[in-house]
Amino acid sequence: MGIVGMRQNSESIILGVTGGIGSGKSTVSSILKELGAVVIDADVISREVVEPGKMALDELTQEFGKDILDDWGQLNRKELAARVFNDANKLRILNSIVHKYVVQKIQQNVEEQLLKQTKIIVIDAPIPIKNGFLDLCDEVWTVFAQMEIRVERIMKRNGMTYQEAVSRIKSQISDEEYLSIANKVINNDDDVTTLRQEVESQFKKLLR
Image 1 (cartoon, one colour):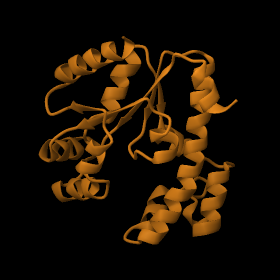
Image 2 (spheres, one colour):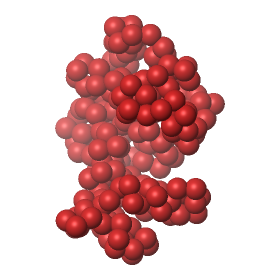
Image 3 (cartoon, rainbow, N blue to C red):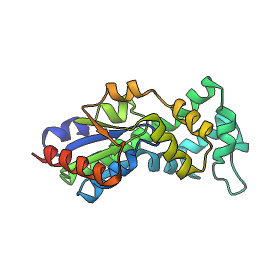
Image 4 (cartoon, rainbow, N blue to C red):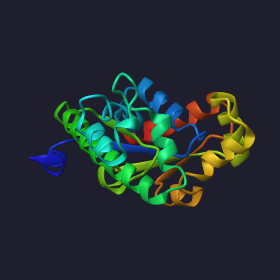
């Protein structure tokens, strides 16, 4: 039947949650999960699809060579990152391979939840790709925080220097792009309590 056909017979709401590193996107998804939503995490899926024996890993080794694997046959992420760093074409190839399998898995998970008549299905995706995210979502929330706040969070959480944190933020799509796709902007400049209140308020509106 496919997702389109299944949606015609379903009251499920598919909510997309996105935002740049340090914005608090994962915290928003965690709160939504506590409120009863089922969360499909694109980051988790992107790690699963490159596990040993998976087709994505086979494609990556064909493209970048077997020395991107460690001694146990698992993906050496640091080695692969070094290969694509500062090479836009290689990064594009890497993303196209991984995204293809991530999208397939997201769609499978959404179909499973539609069959279960899950009320709120959340797709948590750091990169708001068109297929497998924007085309599936009834509504998109962009989680937003000011640059300096994000930098401070990344430094504390990831042990990065100030410049490393800034570089990581700038390697992603711009705030303007994130905001342009948002049906709602969830501001996360304050503490977790304030964020939770906002998420709970917006969640109640969804249920109406």
